[in-house]
Length: 238
Image (cartoon, rainbow, N blue to C red):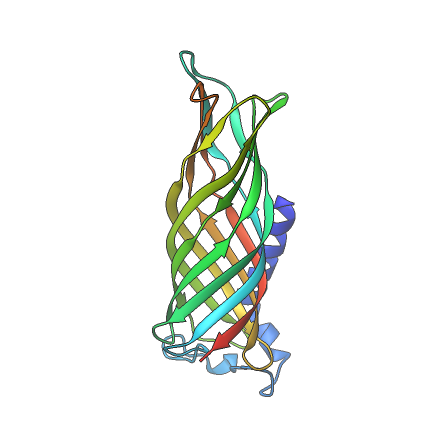
């Protein structure tokens, strides 16, 4: 699933950037929100938004943990050869953006996904348990002038990941500490009829996560760093 989401997201972003002029040529001035790429103004062109707009997206996202620099320590025994792995997840996501200018907006996302945690040393895996995570992410986004039918943007912000519904394997305990880290994202909207639009969004979160198993007898640390790929629809208010 991870490779599928990455492939689809990469293809969508490439289509929205490198091939935008070619895509735009297949539309004419009657297409929703069309901006002639032959008269593109990078600095002052219209973005399709203005101050006071509120843009809401409802998306399906794939949450793809990277599991970087993970390690497992046993109390009294030091570091082990085990590595931590968090499973991929799929969930709905709701986000809302407020525009301060035609270019600058602030976005807040709400989503939750479930993941299974395992450890392995290159051989058989051992399940630690599972947990749900809510990672509210606040992002400042810059929206570039629209080119053809594409409204591209980039952003940077912060994620706070709260874990709940933790289910350790039978007869054990599992604790997960709240994680905080930066996030970056890129994406684009394509205007449809009226105030509706289609959206592709990719976020990279950088989240160091600490876990305690057996009331601290085992401590695991993982650079969760999930890649979040979303496809959805949007509606612009005001």
